[in-house]
Length: 125
Image (cartoon, rainbow, N blue to C red; front, side, top):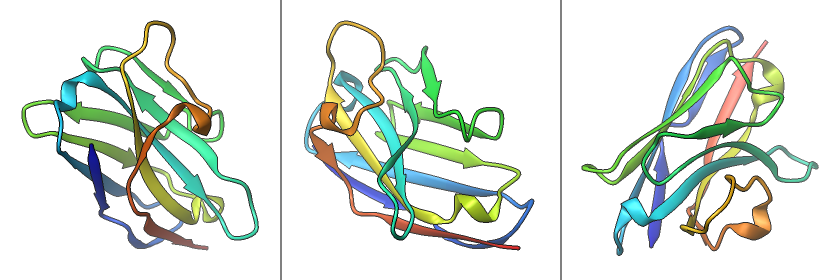
């Protein structure tokens, strides 16, 4: 599956952005989808994941209560609504996917086989 992220930009602290990731090449509903981010000089960090049906989600501790992941299997897209943004949310955000496997949603990047290019999010203070 091929992934294409979009929607990044510059926003003030406290503001919001919505990222979108479009998938193509295979049956989208068979893939668990996620967002990761990487800030300069830091390791890649798990942000959020959503199950194939969209009925289950999980979030990284630093974004819980502020970010919401959602998907539209009819449109082959997964979105990340980011509210109450902070300067520490500044990073390159990437969408990722893995083919459905039984068990809980994965947050380790090694579980994800497919990656899109990143989109830059910059939050000014």
